[in-house]
Image (cartoon, rainbow over all chains, first blue to last red; front, side, top):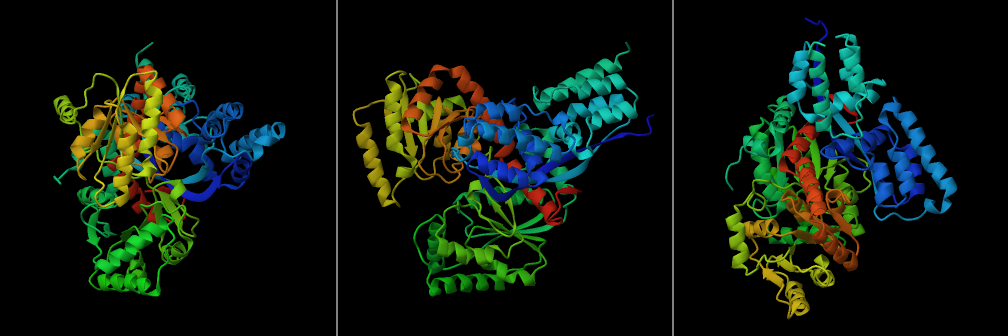
Length: 217
Length: 409
């Protein structure tokens, strides 16, 4: 039996209102520079979790707002294309977003003060992390738990883990690679495109890969 | 109201959601909470507390509900405050402030404050905070109303009390204010097991349409709202007319009675005049409580409109989305929180835009179906009472760790 079991956690977040709002792109970039890391984390990674049942054009609230409230589609597309897997710190993500918006404002200065249809309200979140009753000692356990565990747990270990741990991976792959020594499976889970699948589809993909791994090749 | 158990929600939200609620509550077991509001019957807050309090108790959180008692003069003053917080130019005389304080102090005399958390709902009992030193509790002010553009004098007076709380809760980011205390976002919620929202037999829906003489021989577009200019019923008829030149349809305007609102009668007359001579416009003046009829009208319609000019949260949108109905709504109040444009519904900004979207969506039922499915899922995630329950549990955990961003429990 593996001596390093996988403990499943789950996280929920309470949304905190900051009282800050942007009415145009100029204000957005100003606030983006000084808002908390938690605020960026919420608008880029967490609010999306609450719409996990479908694929939206943009996961990031910033890109979504720039598209629907300012009609700045090119900028929204650029911001929307930022991949969480390329960042291991909020600081680097913030810098990339600020640079993209400032480049856009340099090219189109008239956008800076053009009023949006609806304001962007900056929120931030408080994460409440809890252990669940589920522990996987081996791949069979892991399969059975992934099948039934709450979707927030999948989000926590697969997506939030990257920034929490500052790694280019996720908790599942980390355990599978270092505790089970199954590099191929770890890599396959890492390579799942989280932008093209709902969390339920991601759950199915993990199950499929684990099942394939369990069948002797 | 029948007794509903948490388990009754499992077929609707799934086993995992209920399991997570138990998990969150496990470490709060034995915690004592008091909810204070101003009425036991009638109004959205009482409706929610009737469900929420038993569910919290079922989860092991000892929750008590207290209703502040006051005379007619007290409720006249609190009604004025309510209207002033919505922006009406009202000033509070020193006597009015005295009445508020006297009633609050009188109630506090008989109130035990030995809970861990005290949640004060809306402005009426806000002065309970005077007893903060007497209790060891965390104090929460839950504001259900839109105070984004309040009467400044009245707000300044209220703010002095709000700032003494440990935290405040608002229903929408746009309803909140700059405050020196932590503020949380709690969306209002609907109860999927209430008469207004529960599943109905198709035969019952047919009967309701027959009873109101609304044939379903062509698509039916419906707006449920009281006859109030802020809900723009005349604008709805105009939009329907523009759309009807291209797609044949019926319009149902259904709303509560206008007996206590003199302007309601005038608006209803305007609406009737606008609709005169068109047998495809059905104006229904419903008794003040007709949840099953409203439920059936929403379920039997093809499209739901909420073309308000000003709106509170506009929870009728979530009610319609829950019934898998596509909603065309104005971008006002809490509607944009519920309608994510072209994802969970359609937002409009004018009568012409409304007409165009009616035409487009009646001609593309497959798109309407996709949006309404997402709308249903979004309500399931964000606006059901089970989500509200989870938010309260998360809040109770957070109150022990104010200032921390990640809380391990």
